Image (cartoon, rainbow, N blue to C red; front, side, top):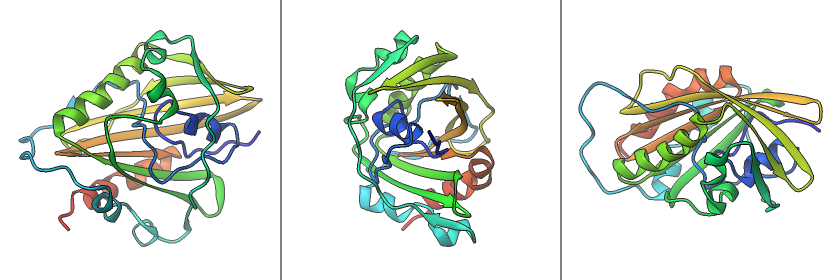
Length: 232
C-alpha cells in the first residue's frame, strides 16, 4: 500500500481511498477539513457581509503552478470511488452523519479545489480548497466538525477492506484571517504511515483549507490566503 500525503478534506471516502492508494481526488470535493483544533479569533474587524462567491470565482483564486514556483505539477482529477465508510472509536465523528462521512453533501455548495505534486514525488503534495458562504455558516459548519475531532485523539476509519488508524493532534495555526484552525493527522495502514497537516483559515465569506506535506502547507498557506482575498 502506498500513501499520498494529499488528502481530500473531511472524513470522506475521498480521504480513505487516497490513503489506501486508490484513485480519488475530485475537483469539487465537498468535505471541509476535519480538525482537532478549536477556532481562535484574530484581531481586527469582521469583514463586511457580502454575497458568497461562485465556484467559478473561487476557482480563479486558487493557487496555480506559477504561484507555487518550480517543481510543482498540477494533479489531474481522478474518478471517485464510493465504498462504504465507517468510523470506529469516535462516536462524535460517527454522528456527523453519512453525508459528511462520504463527502457527498455538505452545506458549502460553492467550492473549488486544486492539488499539486512537488518534484514528481507522491509523498510531497499539497492541496487547496476554497469554500464560500456567509461567515456564520462557514464558521459554524466547519466548527462542528472540528469539535467532533477534538473529542477523539485516535480512531479508525474503514473503507471496504481497508482499515486506517488515525491520530489527530492540535498545532498552532498562523495568525491569519478572522478564524483559523490547524492540526496534524497521522494515518497508519498496512505497515505504512503518513503525516498530513491541515490548516484552515476563514476570511470573511471565504474558507481556505490547505493540506498535505507539513512543510509545503507552512510554505504556501499565506500565499494561498492572499490570492483567495484578492478582488477580481
